[in-house]
Length: 231
Ligand code: PGA
Image (tube, rainbow, N blue to C red; front, side, top):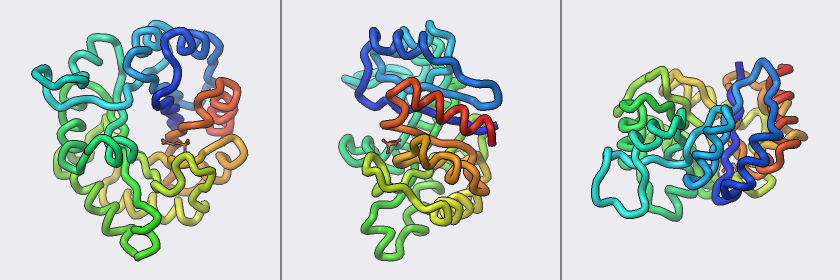
């Protein structure tokens, strides 16, 4: 079964979250996950859909202003968390080390994890894609191994929010490479939308999608889930 996760980023407060969740009816045959901002998690959990946070801290509690811990998310009924999204790495200082620590803490508290990896355009063009992916994936692997609760999202940074997707062949090759390092489900992320989802999701080694922009609209997210369910 494919996993389709909607990463809402910094969109949708509790009211919009309730409206989306009330209208969202995922089809059978796909696992649909919604990832709202922290303040909207209670409203989302109440809807009964499977909900992940967009980040999680590595400590259980402590003097870490602005952070939220794994036991806090678990208490709320949140099922998992995204860690190491490229926006966290780019704007908020996440490193391979902090991504690994967040992953360890989340799994230890029974949360599932979508750990994000991906190369920049510069890294791809200078032939460093495999090196970058290896370093990012091995940081997580060395920390937790092939844990049942772990999923990797391959998100080429140049494809996120740009409307530019990896070609099916690029996705297939990157997924095969990631799986050769760590044998867990691998989602593709980067400008996935209903128009390109079937081609990407039908590639070998593509176990689902992490979706940003196209996950904000309930009709397009439902359409994505339907495409994945029908494959
Ligand atoms: P996008 O975002 O679908 O808007 O490109 C994907 C992501 O950042 O996870």
